[in-house]
Length: 262
Image 1 (tube, rainbow, N blue to C red):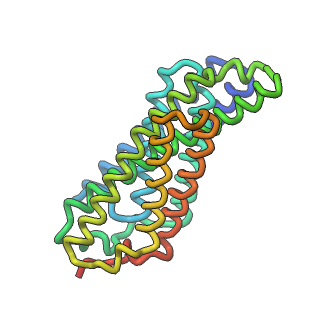
Image 2: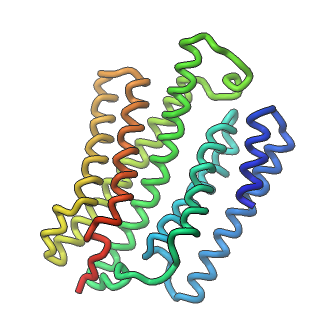
């Protein structure tokens, strides 16, 4: 269903086709419905919201991407944004199925900071999704800016939002994602402090995430002072997202998410 949705959106992006767009949106609605059903069934069988494993984190991330895409169908000239977002969402869904399972892991054993843990994972997921949206808009901004600079105008560019609109949505997504990720890190630090596991403050994942947040904070400070052009801000967005990806990939080497809390 997800692949069919992508194919119809791709068809619409290649050659304007309102029917293909509606069909792609319909399949996307079905995908979202199946994802909701999956979550409900997991909750029914396991007795808790499925959030504790890497599989669950990536599944909820994909769910968030699909939901954001459906919201964006109400925005004019958003076909390319929706397509790029769901290329990410589909890739994550497939790789998640291939690499991970939905089994229990030690995160479920953090009894002392159980509430903080749930909030940490939820906010991190939402922040990751919002920053992914910002990154897609940053890529589109750089692409459109380059085409305009070279005076290469075609039907594809006509179907994209203006540079001003793309920059506005990029800022908005960054503005939403940065505080969500920041609060998530604060909760993680509080959970470490609550259990007096001070050594985890020097963990690779904590440091990488802190660097990512520092980049995004610098983004907003520079934006407020109007020190740089929007194209520089778009590149800054890509760099920040790169550190977010590094933070996620560092799970394999991090002791933070392998801590049992015992």
